[in-house]
Image 1 (cartoon, helix red, strand yellow):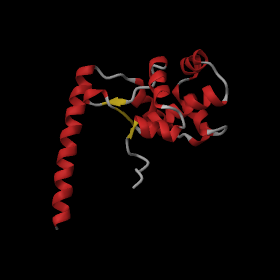
Image 2 (tube, rainbow, N blue to C red):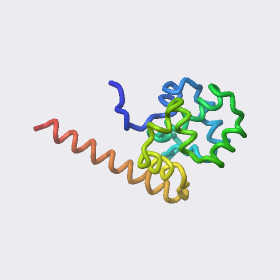
Image 3 (cartoon, rainbow, N blue to C red):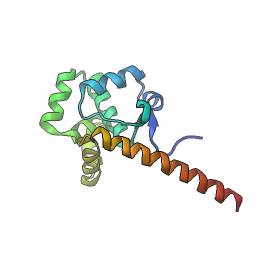
Image 4 (cartoon, rainbow, N blue to C red):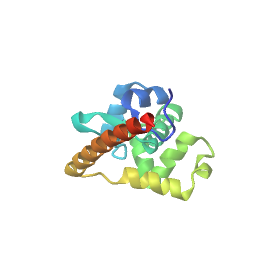
Length: 142
């Protein structure tokens, strides 16, 4: 069964969707401060839809348009994350992004959480998944 468009992706799913090896995604994380997938306990990465949009923009800029890593960093610094994302959407990508979508993506990618906050969120997410599994079980009984 395929995941929905809003589902989080593992690094292998993200790499397959973007057509790049997993090690490239890890490398990009070290070079671009605006690429920050959610990490669960143990360091497992989960990519949100906005992370995939950012990664796709980076891929297009690097591999499609031939920019260097420093070129993409400068583009981000000078023009913002919305231009990186728009590159992944094509020539009229910026027209496809509404202000709310850009704001949500920039807000989600623009603030790094403290490690303690990440750990608390990962703990809460784990608990929510347990509760969801219990609720799903109860619903199946009915």
